[in-house]
Image (cartoon, rainbow, N blue to C red; front, side):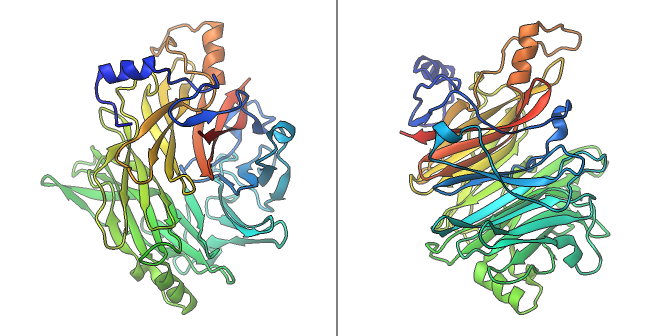
Length: 481
């Protein structure tokens, strides 16, 4: 289905019965089979923000064919990061049960002591039910970044990657992202202060080796557009993906991130999506030879317009890379671009993932896109947080869209993926009173930071929700028709 660009098309879509998810009906070729949204974890705290999950549009959940996994920072006094799992093929017996696989030894907090952490998860199957797992989290201070590496069968090794940095030490660590490639090499990217500026940094762990010293990837370079020079300010929202053995150029790694600039008067903000790309073999050779491998990663310009932010990247085994990012202009949208090779090929034109004309599904600012590729069914799945301000709090829905991997210029909007539609009549002006029903509706469908995992025909969306003034981590699974 092509992107919709007219009200007549929108009315036709509404007439066709595209649901707000939860009705169990079929829209296009995706169906969410269970109306209940099982809980991964429910906090004990009365503060809805007390559970730390991946707020950087990276992956805090992952799946194999037989198991689903998620990580989060709990609301205990130590704010421990936990890896939990459940069988993915026994929904009736296991829908409420998420046994803990491993608990990180080191706590995770922000500067105010909240369990923020930004945990991120990556895994690969070793076969016979065994998995290689890595998950990372910002530590008890903003100057530490921990990674647990191992598996239920092999045991666990926890490393503070920030301790491995060469002088000057990195500090003020922000968001980060993990990826594990087919060879089970692990890639960790994060934003950190290097003594002069906030930079994007990469650490690499060979499958049978140790973590390298983190290498700075991003420069401190100004940006010129339409005759105006914008000064570099900071970088954030790193995301990393690696292609597979079917890539004709050889497995390739791509790191993308958002760069913030200011105009000459320090009044107007510009954001771009940039990145670094390289062949895995080159990085691995440099890492194992003791070289600084940053020189192997060529800079790529993904966003380019100066209005782009919050990128997330996914890669197919055949070498196709897809980047989605927020485009916060007057139409506030999620854009997608793709390339057959980020090292040497051009990027496609931006495609709107869900045009803002679909007002039933896009109510405000679209943020924190998450992307996953289902190679078995050759589909690319994106979800994001759609936010608007209300009197009581900012309310949000987790919306989604899907495209054929062979036609990434055409996206089908899927509407709200969680359970209930956002109430359309909630006041947005200060001083407007809400009814009890409206307050309850806002609370029950204020969902944030969605993470999508699309594996072998079974898409899953994980998200944080507010339920009776508690933070609840939920998930929803469906199947391709």
